[in-house]
Image (cartoon, rainbow, N blue to C red; front, side, top):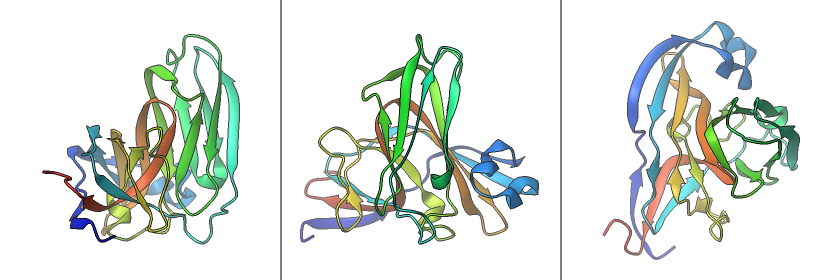
Length: 213
């Protein structure tokens, strides 16, 4: 794209870094992590500059690119939805919904780690958490894979271009769990306050037109 002005790396905004024994979050990646020590890096919510393009994360070759979905009626007591084929789990806590609601999560078909969550526009009364295992992503074990974030795609900007670029409006508050001496990102857990379109992005951004100016 000839209008590119600059390239820069997305740095995780670490509000806390703690070493801890691996818990339930490891189950979205590999049973081998059950005895491992993980390091958690927490990043805060932020808005994205207008005109910025993020690089969407691709699935690795072992992942099925067929659309997957899960649906359930979740009430005020909360509940869980899982897509094992996408290493994805959503936990809706007690009190997040005021009435029984049909919740649907769709792992989109295609190259990228992208989810559609229904009903569109749903606002939660308490934060919901989504857990994404990273071992089946194409960037696993790389610098880009070690700086993943979750981004929200607004209405009208929900497409991902052939060069993997996307135009998110939000970066969600999240915690990424790292293992091993090299600090490989294994699991990414993010906060959901509203539905509906979320993608995983890497640490590479492109600034176009008047971005940042």
